[in-house]
Amino acid sequence: MRLNRRTALGLGTVATAGTVLGTAGTASAAESTEASPTTPARAARRVAAVFAKHSAEAGGNWQAYVSVADPAGPPVVAVEADADRRIEAYSVNKIAVATAVLDKVDRGLLTLDQQVEVSAAIVVPGGDGIFSLDGAYPSLVTLGHVLANLLTVSDDTAVRLCGLVAPAAEINSILVAKGFPNTQVEPVANPNRFFLGTSTPRETHDLLRALVAGTLLSPASTTYLLGLLRSPVAFTDGIRRTMSSDDRARIATKAGWFADARHEAGVIFDRSGAAVLTYALFADGQANPEDFGATHPAVQARASMGPKFLAAVDRIAGVGTTFGITARRPSNGG
Image 1 (cartoon, rainbow, N blue to C red):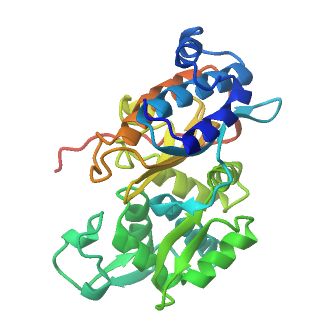
Image 2 (image 1 turned 180 degrees about the vertical axis):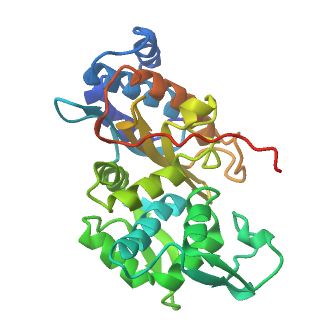
C-alpha cells in the first residue's frame, strides 16, 4: 500500500464519517455489513469506507468531498479529505466554463443555436475530442454542439470555442458572482483563451449541488447541462465503468486528466431522478502517470468506488428537483 503523508492527512478527516485511518479490515467490513443502507448517515459511513479502502490501495494524494442527501436536513458529509486545497482542476473545470456560457444564454446574450467558426488556427493539435479529427477547416458549428463536445468527449478545442463567446475574465467574474472564487480559469495573453485553472473539492461539490438545486442556472440550462453529463457518451472509464446502461444514466459525471492528475466529479441520482450523492474526487501522484487509460491506479480506484457508491445510496431518497432520464435507443442508421 502506498500511503504518503498528504494522503494520510486527507483520509484522517474521513474518520468523522466512520472510517478509521490505517484499519483496512475495518473499512472492508463497513463496506459489507449491510447490503443497502436505509438512512443517510449509514450510507455516508459506507461511502467513507469505500473511499478509504480504494484510495489507499491506489496510493498517491487524494483531495475529496462527498456528501449524501438527507431529506430531513442538510447533506451528510461522507468524505472530507483536504477539501479546501486549491488545485489544478483540469477538465473538471469544463463544467464551470459551461456554467458561465449558459449563464450568458440565460441572460439572452447568447443562444445555443448561434454559430461559431472552427478555424484551423483554433484547433488544439492532438487534443482530446473530435474537432482535431475533422481534418477540414473552417467549419461552422452551433454553440450547443460546442458544449455537447466540451462535456461529453471533453473536447479541448471546444474550450477555445467557448472562449470566443465568453472571455476568461468574464468567465471568472461570473463564477465569483455565483459564489465560487476558487473555481477560476487561468487567463493567458489572448483574452479569448485560457487554461482550465483551479478549484477545490468543496467548491466543485458545491457548484454541482447548486446546479441540481436549480440555483445556478435556469431550469432549461440546468436540464441541458445535466443531460450532457448523464449521456451514454459521457465519461465511462471511472465511476460509471462497471455499470449497466440504466445505472450509468443515473450519474452525471465529468473527469479531468493531465500530467499525473486524474480527477472526477459528479452527481448520483435516485431512481426518481433526484440528487442523492455528490462527489468531487481529485487525485494525483499515483504510479504510471503516462497511462491515460482505464488502467491508471486512480481511475481503477474510482471504477471500484462507483458501483459501491451507487449501492450505498440505492435505498436513500434524493432531494429537490427530479430530472427524468431521457430514453436513448441504439440506432442502426437508416
